[in-house]
Image (cartoon, rainbow, N blue to C red; front, side):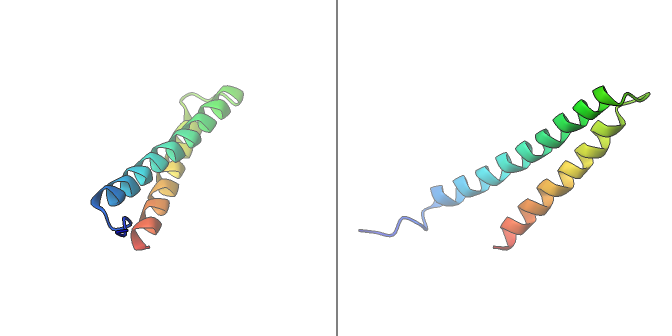
Length: 69
């Protein structure tokens, strides 16, 4: 039986999964920021902006970490 771990489809799915993971990470941080903005209102959505940036950093960190593997 041939080894299927080196098939191109496996590589594609691995990177597609990494992209989905990044989007979900950013989405969770944004949702939490929106919740905080509802609980502690400001003139503009401060918590959403801050946590969106933190989510981007966390998503990029996770993506870079998976690239290095």
